[in-house]
Image 1 (tube, rainbow, N blue to C red):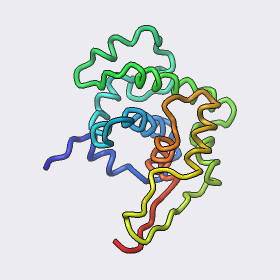
Image 2: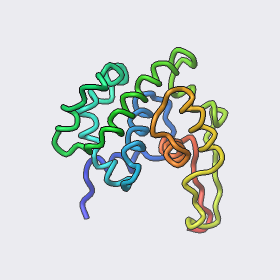
Image 3: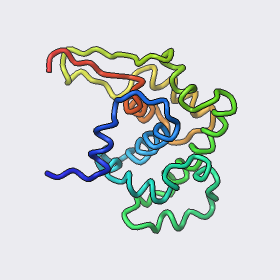
Image 4: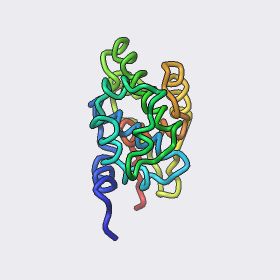
Length: 172
């Protein structure tokens, strides 16, 4: 099976620690669109997300008029969920506010793990979780800061994608 460029790129980046706000925004966007779909479907759309969201330029995405997202919805191969598209725009706006308070989105996110990846150890891959109390805590704080579509599972998986949480399986 040939993987789409978006899936291949996402797999290569998933779990690698990043302090780059644009990369984190992109990973969060995949997480938002993953809700109700598979990560492969959402990751396969990375080239489309970049096209409709100004190459994931946070300032430009934050400036998109929420009332006028028809061109994004109509873009070929775009996931046409208006709520998710609106969430991406709201999340870009929230990141701008976060930057004012914390200096960067990365600073804000990495504070939850004391600037060091949190290692989750498992005996087998069957034990790997998609959420835990940290995901719920961070999701609650993100919502308080204006983020949307960031429930405990999305947030926890986003933190894994950005390398803040890393799974270590002993019996592979």
